[in-house]
Length: 415
Ligand SMILES: Cc1ncc(COP(=O)(O)O)c(C=O)c1O
Image (cartoon, rainbow, N blue to C red; front, side, top):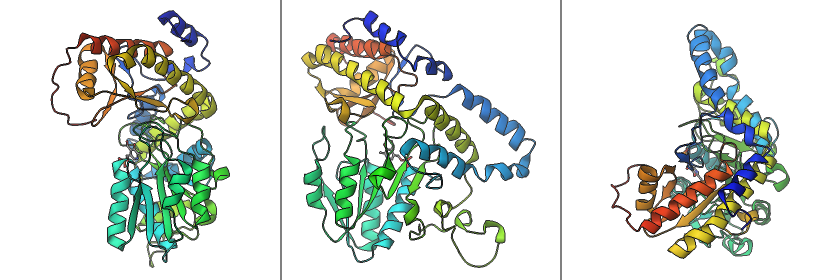
């Protein structure tokens, strides 16, 4: 093991160039929070910024503050564009990931009227599949679901077999929400383009943690959450990316005044903004956007490449601890072993996963994230997770599993 004691984990923290970022978050040493891949921590600056926006901009400035608020969706979009290899004017922050997926998928299907097939991953995050099921049913299209290895993710050639000349759209997650496997975004995009399909990537588990270059990969469309690795808070608005060359051609289906070219003209029929602004519909959630601005700026300050370097090292330590401690206790690794193919979280599987998660939270001071039926997801966001956190959390999981007394947990209500 490269890390064979708590002291050697602490030595990695001492040499960590991102160590100072931890103080930029509201953070306690206990419990050890490993669910940042679900809901990121609160940046210190967010509380102050929100208090100022509420007291001054809303409390005093009132409706006049829309002068600055109105551009937040594109300003924050431009900030996120810089994190995914897009250009200014290609990303907007609006609505939820689910709604953005619906809007962009609908627009893509409208742009390919003769093609009758949507291709998607049978094991993708449920909301993505549900949106596509609904679209396929409403338009009488075929939803062709491919299956892939649950740990390694899709192989490019096997996936390409699902694509046919009548494919309108391929929808996939770049980083698998369950295993953390990274899909080969550029190669898959190229294969979809070879049959003239458009491609829509869900970057929810990539943005702010795994480098993405949508421009060099020729990505058409993308969506993603801001409340995970961008730390924008519960229910913060999502982002939507539309390649600039596609913007004049694509029309999203939920027409509203925020998508209108002359929003305050107040007359005439719908004449959408030909740019990324046309992706909007109604009044933007200002407080969520302010939080997303702070969160995305923190990620930009640290740099996605530096974040990725630390992230790979954190999950590598976790894999070493897993092999030494958990594998002998009947756990299996639910994430790729190859660090280049692994995202920001590690999944360990166990038949009593929910009971173990519950006990970890209640008794061991570790907050993981559970996914039915048997996955414990351990998220290690590099901006605030230390190497000693990884060591301690896996050590506590080992101790708990060794005790053999996992209580029957209450039924689950949320994540
Ligand atoms: C891959 C993926 N897509 C979408 C979502 C959620 O979308 P929404 O913010 O619309 O609930 C999640 C949530 O965890 C996710 O993991």
